[in-house]
Length: 163
Image 1: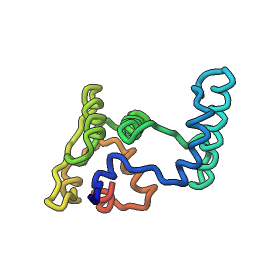
Image 2 (image 1 turned 45 degrees about the horizontal axis):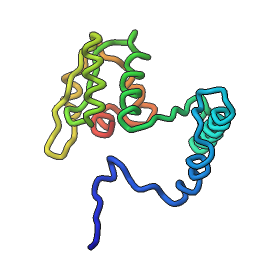
Image 3 (image 1 turned 180 degrees about the horizontal axis):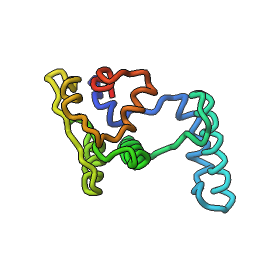
């Protein structure tokens, strides 16, 4: 029987090249990288080597590379980190109403910390209309997300559809 897997957004099979690269660490270098014992030190060096390799691929500094254990953890770190880093610039945030639950939960947690969050509706095609963004923007907006969109080369309307 042919098996068809359609949930690659949640998890996906490991590519053979990745498995070959990871196997030595899964079998022999499995120490806790935060611990000072030998296996931990070996694991820490492996993590740092991987961090340097990823940074080189992305033309970034190794200090800019953060590994997370899941997409949910990465979403939480990105949303909350960006909001907190830009808190002095405003506490009004905009997001789409159909984000992944981990993203929506990060915004809800920020609401409990005093942030005002607008969950913008989307069209049947899943797009946030630029006019909805324009209507929702206030002087209290947290400019961090807009700055992130500008860094990626999106103008305001494009950001509304692509972020």
